[in-house]
Image (tube, rainbow, N blue to C red; front, top):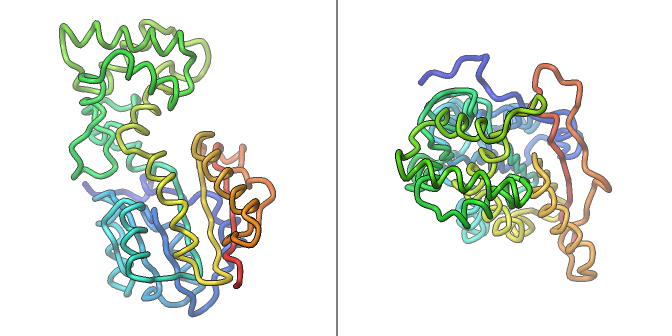
Length: 299
C-alpha cells in the first residue's frame, strides 16, 4: 500500500535527539528502528554521507520506504533490532551514533490491515514483522485465561481484578466464536468495561497484546547490553521509550552502568529523561515519549 505524506511517521523529539547526538560530517550512524526515516534524514543531512548510515527495521512497509536512502548509499537491514545488533557485534562494527526509537510508527497504527488499533476495523494481527507466525489473534484465541490475565496486567497496566475479568470474557466468547478482527475484541471489552473517560477501555489490552506479539520488552532487554559494543569511544546513544516498562528497563541499564565503577562502558548524558511535548497538536502520540542519552567512555 502506498503511504501518503499524511500517514508518515513524524520523528519524535527530533531537536533533542540532534542536540545530544551532535552529528558531524564523516560520522557513522546506526538507526536500529529507522521506521520511515524521519530521524535518519536529519542525521544524514549533518553527516553529509548516507553511505555512513545503517538503517534497521523489521517492518516490510518501512523497509520499502527506506529504499530511497539505500539509493543514496545507506545500508538497509531487514531484521528486528536485537538480531541486527547481534550480527553487527559479531562483525565487529562500531558507530559514532546509535538511535533506538521504541515507538510504533503512525502507518502501523493507522493502517487497518495491520491490526494495531481498535480505531480501525481490521484483522487482529499486530505483527511488526509480517514474516513471524505469532499474531495477536493467536494469543487471544489460544492463550489460557491465566496467561491472558497476566499479560493484560503486566503489559497493559490493568488491575488484577480488571485483567481477570477481561481474560474471562475473552475465553467465554471464543468458545462460541474465535476473534478475527480488532473491532470484535474492542467491542467485547467496551461491553464489560464501559468508558469512564476519554481513554477507550480496550487501550491497555491492545497495548499488552502488541507488546506480547512483538516481544518488545524481551527484545529490549537482550539488546541493551550489546549497545556499548557497537559504539566507538566517545560515541553517543539515544533511546526513546513510550511507556513505563520500556523506560524502566533503559533507566535500570544506565544505572547499572553508573554503578559498575571502572567496568562501566557508558556515562549518562541526561540526568532525567527528556519528555515529549504535551502541547504537540501535530503529533499527540509523542506526548508519552521519553529520551535518555548516554556516551561511550573513552578508555
